[in-house]
Amino acid sequence: MTPILHITPPAQWLPVSAEPLIIAGPCSAESEQQVMETAFGLADIPQVKVFRAGIWKPRTRPGAFEGVGISGLKWLQRVKKETGLLVSVEVANPRHVKEALDHGIDILWIGARTVVNPFAVQEIGEAIGSLNIPVMIKNPLNPDLKTWIGAIERLNQMGLEKLMAVHRGFSFFNRSPYRNAPMWEIPIELKRLYPNLPVMVDPSHICGNREMIPATIQKAFDLEMNGLMIEVHHNPSKALTDKNQQITPVQLQEILARLILRRESGSIEFENKLEELRSEIDKLDEELIDILARRMKVVEDIGTYKKTNKITILQLKRWNQLINERIEAGEKMGLSREFILKLMQTLHEEGIQRQIDVMNQKT
Image 1 (cartoon, one colour):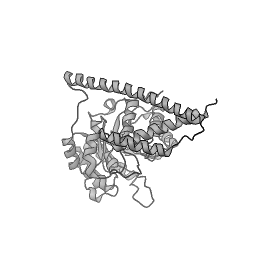
Image 2: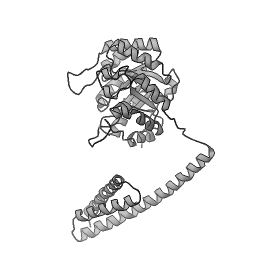
Image 3: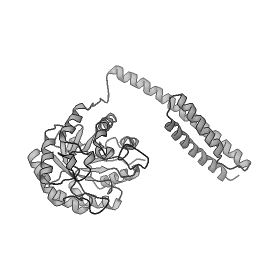
Image 4: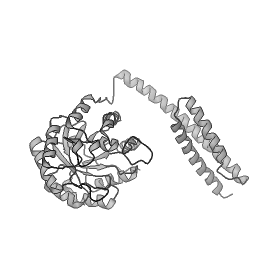
């Protein structure tokens, strides 16, 4: 059973109206001038309500720019005072939390490298204590929904209810145009499990390049994500970190102007037609599940026959023939090769396991 999350909607704790919520700012706070120039540019965009900047930067190797530290928090105080924007920073340990709270930071976020460590998440929650400051939790580097959920649940059970998840993509070893593959099915499943949990999208880390950002943002909102956490720099070509994935305030304004925010529901005619099509899918799914159940029963019968005749479970020649035939048949019906291959691999894995279970049954 999925635990219930006690979440306070952003509309109840944000002092400004923001739907969708746009959080923007440089990957790293580099200088007071850079921070303020970027902040003033973002303050001119009505949709932007929160300014973000990395103060402590977790770097893979020592020697790279690791952030300006506490001095950057003073710059964010100035941003808050002079622009009216809320301010947000990443924290990775209790010291970061204390410094951020002492400098009036409005929203904290826990990064992908920290979220995988339950001890670190626990310590951050304890450092926040009863203040119940808003916290955003980024997904882990690897596509591990349980770890992501675990960090969210841990903070929630400690009394923190102003929580948001941030989808920043996942490390993916196959060739991909993305820096971190979006794997949209994972944040969609998170929203299914916890419909009251806002899920933000970080298109900067997903894309790794500014060219793909507009399409990724549109995709995010088409999938009913709740907002953006995007990297914006007044001069990205001079950025000390992640220069290729940062855009200018002007570019962000242009992207938001072209963004299409689709309605969750339409006219009565639209809803009736949609319900008709959904009912058709429901019927087909029932038939599909019935067919799969009958298929697995035949697989078990095959397992019994193999056991009786002392034949090995895996028959590679038969498997290769089946894959080729199913892919060919699927492509003729307009289904992609990749989809058919994944489907057949899933069925094969389940079939092998069922035959193993049959083999292990005592007669």
